[in-house]
Image 1 (tube, one colour):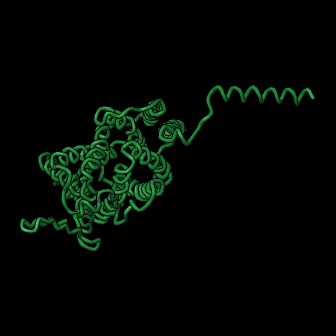
Image 2: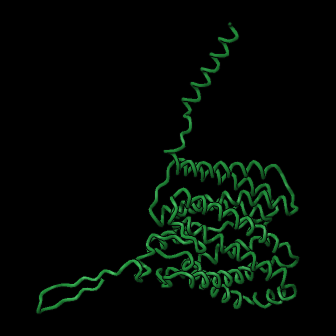
Image 3: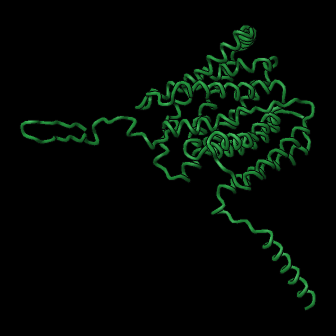
Length: 358
């Protein structure tokens, strides 16, 4: 919009650009949520949710399979942090490519915030990859499933959120399922990653406050994280042995790592869209449901000891997921109360008694 003042004639000329003229990309994309070139803002909330859920399930199921496949390579279990370094490098490249394809290339979130997010992301993904050197895959996944608990705590302390009885009950069920699942795998020493309590909430707050795109979030958080890991591996002398090992079998290491990173990048793009549209808790609930399917596939494709204690503990976690989803849809899902169940039971008994009498 141009304003022109003329002192002699005392008038103001206002020029409004037409729709075909280029306006600020920031103004045009305030409400846009773009995932892999697809603008989800054109769809209603329900369609957005199902698109994101489908993306998360498809890409992360492949991601989980490839992750376990990489660690099945003999001698690779000590290379967890190096895999994370390679993964962060690929994520940074993919994010840079995607950012070049959108109109607005400006960084909106402050650098200090990205440094915090990068640190938390390094902790989350690095410990997750490294844990496969010590845990079997289902145990690692079940611990990641229960990050709903720390995410809730993070929501309370970071964003001042409040949760209802159903949310708390969900957290309790998942905690009990987690403990039981761990007891079933008593030969391991699980490492519960508390950075999940913070990262989802920090991402949600930053993306909503600054209206940042998914590609921006991925590019800056993972490129800064790459520097963190590179410095760490260099200082601990862990870089040389990992590079030497992977160079001996590049197809099964770097090849798998590329596919692993590609599917992970696609998956994280849908997760960030869920966080931006629906919030961190819903996003974690969806990814937790995906992980339940990953556990089943892990037992199918990779041989490992099995006990029915895995089943019962897994059902407790599923119950926790259901309670969490129910708490978000209480107005649409009406469960019968205890009083209603008792009345129905009494009426059923009376009906049976009358039928026997007749």
